[in-house]
Structures are given as C-alpha cells and as structure tokens.
Length: 181
Image (cartoon, rainbow, N blue to C red; front, side, top):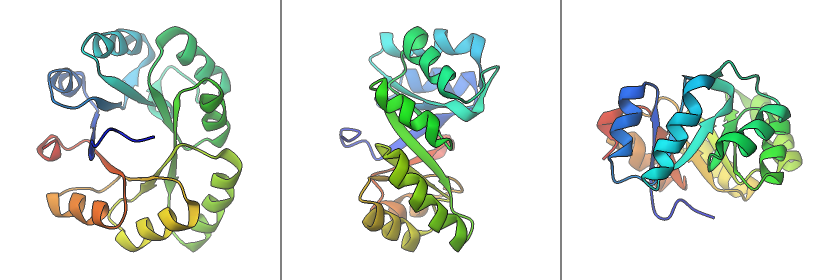
C-alpha cells in the first residue's frame, strides 16, 4: 500500500484550503478541523474530482471518535481512510476496508515504548509520527514497527520535508500551503 508516489499529504484546516486542494495535483488529501455537517459534502466533492480523503477522526466536530463513528463514516460518507490516535478506531477502520493511520505523539521514551504496544495490537496500515521533525525517531519507528511512517507536526520548511523523507518516511502531512509543492 502506498500513496502512489505522493510524498506530501496536504492537510486542509479550512474550507478555502480544501477547495484549493480539489483543484490540485494531489490525489490524497487530509481533512482536519471540520464539522460533521460539512463532511459528506466535502467527501462527495473530492470523489467527483477523483481525490481520496483521509479524515482525521479525532478532529471532526460533532462526531465522537469511537467505533460507531468509524461505522458511520464507512457507511454514509465513504472516505478513503481515517487518521486517529485511538487504536480501537484504527482496528474498526481496517475491518471496514479503509486506510487506517495510527497517529502517535512521541513526546518522550515512555510514549515511544507505549506506542510500540499500541502498534502491535492495532496493526495500522500507516503510522503518523508527531512531531515529524525527528529524523532519528522516524527511522527507528519505521525499522522497529515494520509499518510505513508518515511524518507530521511542526513540518515548517522544505528542508523538514526532505529530512523526514530521507529518514524513511513514506510521506509527510502538512497544513502549510507553502509546502504543497
């Protein structure tokens, strides 16, 4: 599984940015910080333009991030996949044949060790490592977990993007339009 060579996964925080991405070269786009009432319309617009939406489940206002929300998304909205910190949601997304991206906040050594246990249990399709500006950790997690890594969070420059990719990240998520190169 891959993003078909797409190395930047642009993440839209505002409708204006989402609309911009609908007319972009990108196939895969990430939807952040939206309201449940807008989501079906957004995914439908994206599907019309042959875009694949990854919904950040934990950031959808009006939707509780749990297994029922995953079922609802799979049945009613049909995104390509979800991103979540919740392993129960990741496991449900996999059962629903959606791309499942486990988001990991790696703040310290304990968080890293706990993350390896979560990864083993959930078996996501991808890991999103935050912050994404830690090349050594990206390399370690990629090698240790054996699951493709996406770097995200605090990606501010093209150098940050290149360092993450060189460290072994499959792709980089960013909400910075200047990096949607």
